[in-house]
Length: 526
Image (cartoon, rainbow, N blue to C red; front, side):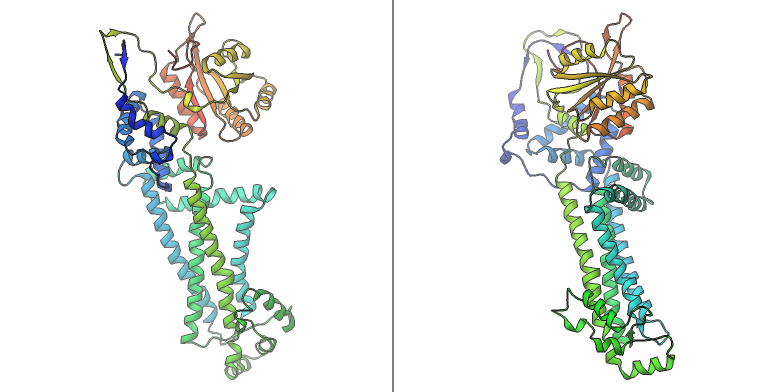
């Protein structure tokens, strides 16, 4: 029972929290960079907390906050330390997915080494006793890799239609494919956690794409290492011959092509560029008999081997090095994205509020008098840091006019209401006009009837609203209720929980669902 009476603060209890909120960086311990598994476990824990009573969350997080306060953690460190405390088990979904990703990386490296070695061996050990056609081998094993690497870079860097039509699709299906492969044999909990993580790409933008890039480039690097190993090993145990044949190119044209290809290394390794005489000597034709080709190869073995340095340099310059660069860029990008996560979406804001609630001695100095419970113990909305000016949406059915509702919300939240719109009626043009008026608003408060279950109309409107606002603009859905006398009343907690559960499907981290206070006082005011 809530007791009213004089309250004495235990100022000693507030001291550890001062280190947490102090702006002096020297009072805060540096936080570690999170891993993908930490983020997955965080979202799983926040999702589970949605179904727990607020009193249970406050008690648990107050205890954890007191235990962590002495560490002087910053915002990110506090959230990560909390994740470490509430993980379901050492085999949590996030850690399970991390282990699967590491296993996938090892398997891809092994597959790359094997496929690269076999690909080159398949060309060099043809068994036909004829020279290997470099005009076919180079495009198949080197040129294709170069095209894919260039395409990958263009998709990420090119603006306009290419990024929208190709890049967005590549950023979606490729990480999805790798993720589906990684969690195929994972327990159901890990699969559900990965799907939850996928839904929050707007928070952890690019993480899945760059993690998939790391995995794919690990395979590509290993492929080139395996190919180079085969190129060095097979000539030591066999005597492969390299030549060329083409109906569309003569020796002069091929020399010009090889000169362009060899530009990066010609100055430091001139032997890796076949001369015109070597190109003429290694010309092969299907019109020649196999016996003549074999005799020519035997009589001029040093000439037929002139293409080997060219192939080795090509694999290094156009195969291995670009893949090493791409993998390095992906690793740096991953580290930068992980290190730049602010943990500022709705669930983390609420979490930090609960962890940093000050320690108060609630015992009355005099005789305690039983009073009424002031309402929900949930922390107020103030930490959202709403801008000074907001816009309001009155959903059809909410009592009063949009202007009257705007005046009430201005009193409750202490903000300036720039405009109030009405939406959700039968007139679709009115909804479109409301969305146009709300475009680029700093924050939007959407007031709905609590007793009415959220339908597809609500979800569709909120999706379109988010598209117009852009990311990170706060959207607060306020559920309200009125009594039989037409006056505002407190919202049934069951209705509020229903709204929160349904709107969670939007996976919008900067959307909150709250109950509109029945009175006109700002929430948390005395």
